[in-house]
Length: 233
Image (cartoon, rainbow, N blue to C red; front, side):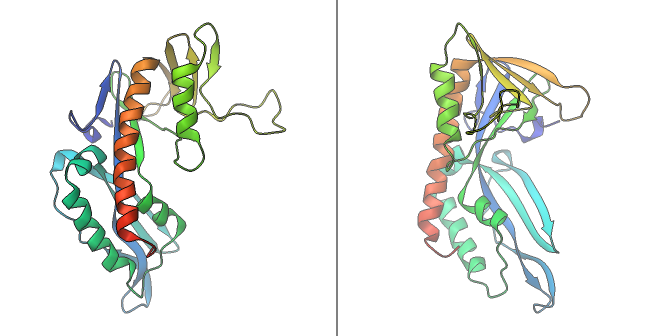
């Protein structure tokens, strides 16, 4: 169950049947060499203190022995507490200039790009949002939520690639599949505990407003981190 990962208001956007929140990915452990450079492992980052209710554990990954660990922190809270972001950037700079750092693409992306989390249904199950600030997917999602016709069913998905066959599934922007149907967004998802896929119907206007606010908070903090780090990473 993902409910324990929800940030309280005003650090999350709450609508009828869903919660959405912008998160900034803090690198808790960076991939690198340990034991005097003899073994692959992770280099710890001295993260600033923050209230427990605005942070939760993120992804931990190991590739060829190199460890990357993430803490997810509320972007809204960080936007209100810019000094905390600046202390994080200072701590991260120390690690990014370490001679035994082995930064990979995943860790680099996490440093510079936050995300928006979506939780839906009676159990507040987490549903994947496939949005990025470099491929136009966020703009596509917001445009569909705001402008898709209400008298037709529209795939909540990226435009089809050139040469895509008519029978191929669209690249949906959320969940297993999602469709804009009138004033609703129908999202099919697999619950956190597994089992059969379920479908939730969300108000598209509520979802658009929540997405716009959560994305703006995330992007604001990401921009500050990028400016603080410059060209180090």
